[in-house]
Image: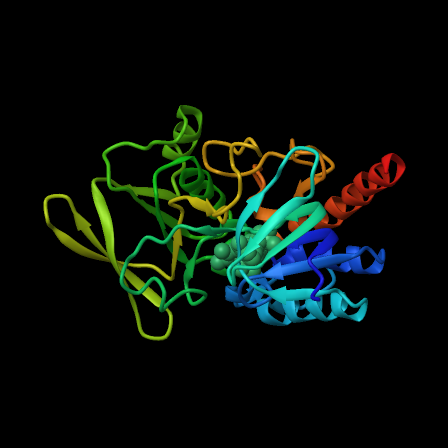
Length: 313
Ligand SMILES: Cc1cc2nc3c(=O)[nH]c(=O)nc-3n(C[C@H](O)[C@H](O)[C@H](O)COP(=O)(O)OP(=O)(O)OC[C@H]3O[C@@H](n4cnc5c(N)ncnc54)[C@H](O)[C@@H]3O)c2cc1C
């Protein structure tokens, strides 16, 4: 009969999950990693990674994730491709994972590494120019736009703070917002409004991202219907990020209003034996390097939790 119970199950095979898988396999824990798509997570869609340590020349997102997966496999990480469609966390009993194929697995300890995804603006050209001028991450891609002009879509805290950050690199940042005022906190707004390198275009939407091989311009449509074209080499979309939390018991995990999971410094959630790591966590910085760090910490916490079970059993 196929095995259905594990000491540890890891949900998600992005940087956080693969690091957790590496640590679990190396620690010889009875474990299983479940990934619903291609192993590697969001990084697979990232053309070039310049800020992951150990690669002085940078590395493609695909190659980096291939290396992470290969390293975990060297220690015989167990993984399956399946969608964890529902998670149940009963009090004082094994955690239950329902899979897409109708089967059910249980575990003593669970690490949630299901990540998140940036919200799309839904503008023509957005998908086509992803990684060729379109970005969802200023920290990741800002340095690629040194002395160039970029557009920022959004008007909340992240958009305004990232616009400010992008002025470190870009010659000019044009923030295009559909309202006549920003939603960002007053102090954030004041700083950005006083920055001579940020131009604000109010009451307007980006209606197309244009170019040949790379981004060359944005088409801007004002609420009065007037259409203009602004030459830019980059477009940063900051209209929110959505956690991949479908099927998770969000109330039990005390998820925040955005659906992200709060954890302590040991990556423990409020449910004993359940850890979370990476972009699914309620936190400010979402980068590969801290996702990996948290994946490692989460396994060490799982080991401590499992040791307490051994003592009580
Ligand atoms: C365009 C872009 C560029 C970026 N560039 C950089 C950069 O240059 N440097 C940097 O450090 N960071 C960058 N980031 C951020 C980085 O990609 C994330 O911080 C990192 O991928 C988070 O890793 P994670 O493992 O938490 O989640 P993810 O990478 O999101 O992986 C989560 C995985 O879980 C799987 N999953 C989800 N739900 C389920 C389920 N129910 N069952 C099974 N599997 C599931 C998903 O399929 C996915 O593979 C970038 C992000 C974007 C969007």
